[in-house]
Length: 89
Image 1 (cartoon, rainbow, N blue to C red):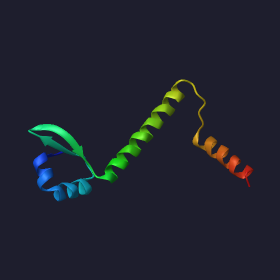
Image 2 (image 1 turned 120 degrees about the horizontal axis):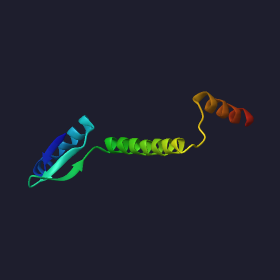
Image 3 (image 1 turned 180 degrees about the vertical axis):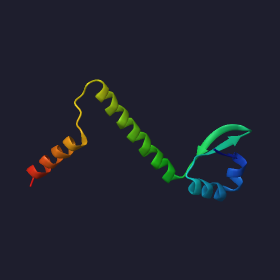
Image 4 (image 1 turned 90 degrees about the horizontal axis):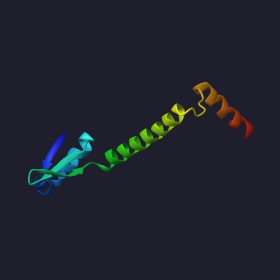
């Protein structure tokens, strides 16, 4: 975990920005010794958002599976996709 003061952010933005890009981790900014905000590179933020969306989709799929929804093995799914693909040719 990287923690920097708001003074460091104000006085040395370039270093904080470089650190965010180099580590691809959130940087916790404190104000008067207390946690205030989190700073991260856009790339790290977008990657984090993609991971959260994927986890959400996996959780929904797992809940459906556990409730008895129809599931397919990888080979069954591949066969269905190939059949649809071949039907459009």
